[in-house]
Image (cartoon, rainbow, N blue to C red; front, side, top):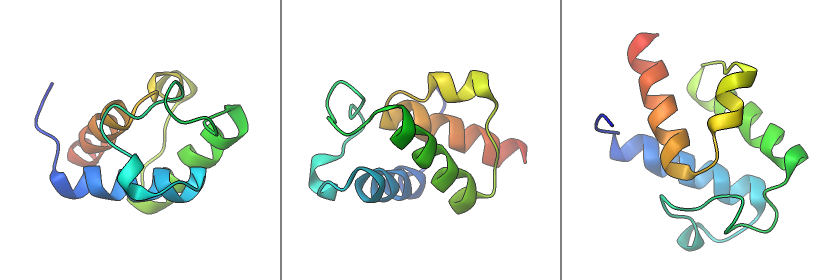
Length: 84
């Protein structure tokens, strides 16, 4: 796994906090549907849309299916920003 910018991680944490309406202190790299009760299918789509808008990238359905932790999301966003 390549290095992910701390700025990207912080932005992802802020978006996750906002979408799932939880304190940012509760959001870490391991945060996932298993640790965030509100992380359900509709909210997952809202999260993806917010990430696409914030970072100016788009995600395929296959990529969306892999976005199951803050760490995985941060990694994918970083890769897309490098390849953009």
